[in-house]
Length: 320
Figure: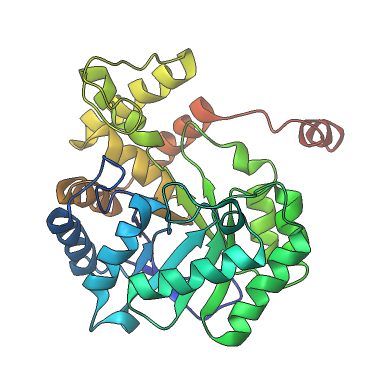
């Protein structure tokens, strides 16, 4: 496992692959039981991983509880990122959800208890609730840093303009965005904004919910298809990408999912692996040893390219 500075404005070294905690637990009815979850965490740590991402909503708080048990006695060896907005309750009261300061304060205290720690490395809203003023979010996060309950701030699933406004008000350390060969719209505004702001860029769903592994073609289940009788229809773009991943996998004697993950790693950000089994995690970790050729990367870039839209397409024309 290699380590890189997390963003341009910290001295914090993070492992190149982050562990996502959405599948740690079973309270949502789909995930890894505690014993298997601990195996996943141990396999990640044994490989040199030091960054675990979770949320109070993941498995209704069970993900944080399992992580808290695992890091007990070795807390300072890990970077812990967690999120709030929806609450860990299945049916929370209306005053306890959203991004406002009351929900923020309740959430951070509850997460600290479940994680069995007195500080959280990175804390962020899970998504823009569309109601709370960005100024309130910024000041609330700043107060949590001042109190010592959190060390760094971040955002996920926010419009770029709102993230920019918050970043102009307080030091914003991280953003978490969806990014993979099938979802590259973050290149329009998010990635340039984050790069300009020196933020650590966390990429979730690097395998597009398992779609890029090609497993749904074989009738397997996963995040997108949980029923064995279900199916997933590929559009032409998706078909061409998976076909080429399969071709490269055959050349390198690896799996299509490993190739897709190697492509993500070539972008030099911080992809998240959300494994439900230790074997799934180990396969993604093997991608660190894959050396894609420039031809491989260029072809994958071309097959997955998107229109950047206005004004970027216009600017590309007028700038020649």
